[in-house]
Image (cartoon, rainbow, N blue to C red; front, top):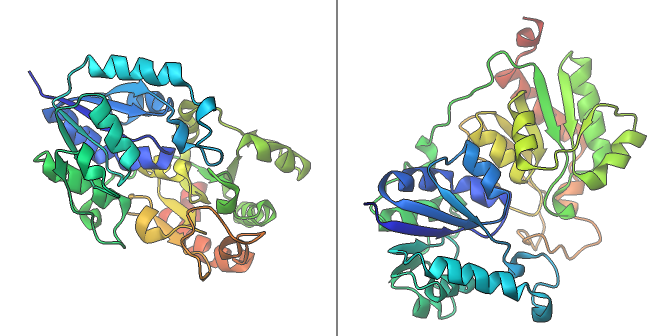
Amino acid sequence: MKPKLLIAELWGLGDLVIATPLLRAAAEKYDVTLLAKSYAVDLQRRLWPGVRVVPFIAPWTKFKNKYLLWQWPWRDIFRIREQLSAEQFDYGLTARWDPRGHFLLKWFGVKNRIGFPRVGSQFFLTQSLERPAPEAHRYEYWRAVGRALEIELPPREKFFIPTATHGRETILIHTGAGQPVRVWPLDKYKTLAARLRQRNYRVQIACDPDQRDWWLAAGEKNIATPATVTELIDLTDRAAIFIGNDSGPGHLAAFCGVPTFTIFGPQLPEWFAPLHPSANWTEGKPCPYLPCSDYCRYPRPFCLWNMGEEEIWTRVEKFVAKNFPVEAVAA
């Protein structure tokens, strides 16, 4: 019988996707349960079929008003505790240096608790790990907790995801993001899409629900507004190229085998670049507060908005020519 392992990744879509290598490898040696937001169920079907998902929205993962304790879903929180405590997990871990996650592992009665301590949270852990270098990609944190489980993941520069876009004819441009400060202006995306279409590329625009009316007013008729991760995966599976903001859909596209081009703003590519070997990106403009973790001090995120259409087009043109030459469209 495999040892029972609880993995907590309570944050965004991109964070969950970056955990994929560890989840897949751990499922070969452990009976793995993942505590994560509900869209992890859709990801599980595609990325980690050997992992059991327990959906849970941690109230402290909200962007605003996260500590209004009287609004927390206490009944759900205690239900989850009762459910997971009964499991009697042999091991538990989180790849974040977050005392709240460490407390949960202790609260759930996990026997061996692995993590990166912060502000005294080693009290909740049985094995404290040294954090990777400050400039390290988020993937390196999963490599570190993997080593604690005697799982050796390949270094980022040797990580390989096969490209699975043969015969596809669409460039998918996704203009949404988890926070508005990560969104490159929509009018600039419109110009980018027009220039690609002038080169005879077929372009599919996908967006968040709050962007749909803007695109309709701009004359875009065939807009996709995926409401679930499964719908997003279906779109991605028809794409030869993905272009978008620093957001979860880009990470998902990368793990579905699609080369990605990411327009970064307040976050750093060295921390959050998609893991596909053909991934490319442009960095945000200099700012004294970069990275700001999405809490921008200015009325507009100048790190992102000051990137001009011509600057991005020059980079995108080279990226598309390399990964999806126009001859492939004609063929």
